[in-house]
Length: 403
Image (cartoon, rainbow, N blue to C red):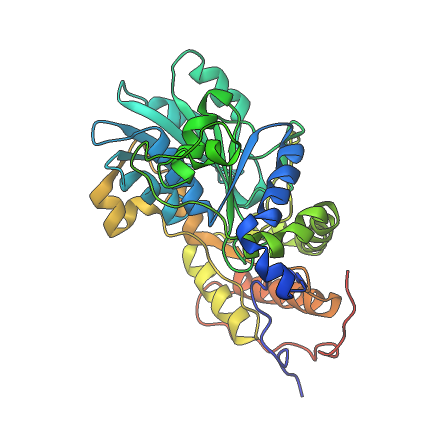
């Protein structure tokens, strides 16, 4: 009898991160040894940017907003196709959000649309490197020369990826990384980092991180006591987060190559779907990505919804992605869409993300590829009516074979 895969294949699963926590490790948590080691590795990885480990990428984004002292008279430009905290970090300070369209190839911010949205009140442009594929930063930097506008990289999905050989997060004025459990590497649930390329911001960011105090200078022996300097909050990563993250950072090349192997298997096996009008990811030559997301875009939103339903019916936890922020209740309240929405809503309505994580097995991925191909073939061969599919028998589910 034909059956689906016997157990649910999740969309994501945290990368294994075995750690040994003994009494000595617990006793030393207050010294932040692991956090400092993570900072040192990332600083080396980034080519010398100042690195501050944070509880989350959201925290890193909020730090940039506080350091810039944004208020109601300021505007921040960002893509609508992004996670909520790309926007809320700045709306929390009262800044006006100006959403713009995305590039249809990379799904990153449309540089021309962003530049067209600039006014004298523009203080920052937030770029999002979707799926670990860099936006066109060189073009944006050239357009902003002499403007004083700050470039903030939301590189939440960018660890292990680069643009013209430079790591994502280390190119703009500020870069924000995520080590959430859904990312390629993680800090045990949540975690983040802030990269600061411009040394003129170094002291300000340390004060923002340490609850508005100059505690960092005190710890270095530069002052005899630390005092309250400005309004802020606590944005320090816990050392147990660093303990979980550190071995993965040390192994980042191997883990990224593993992820790219999975991504390339999808790309090679699903390439024939392009003849049906299905769009696969496209990587610009100047971008070295990290295999964070493999996505498909079907010809219509209705076909996407039906394909998702079929994949889930066969125990494949494929998923869509962002609801464009400008269409949400909070997005309508705190921002405005500038220019034409040519690609944001359309792309969001047609996108499917396939399962990808470190422990995905060969058998599981082959099954996903087979079912995705069969579902898309049958849906696009008969666009009217409801298509119900039955898969062939899958390989043995207990196989531990790995790509």
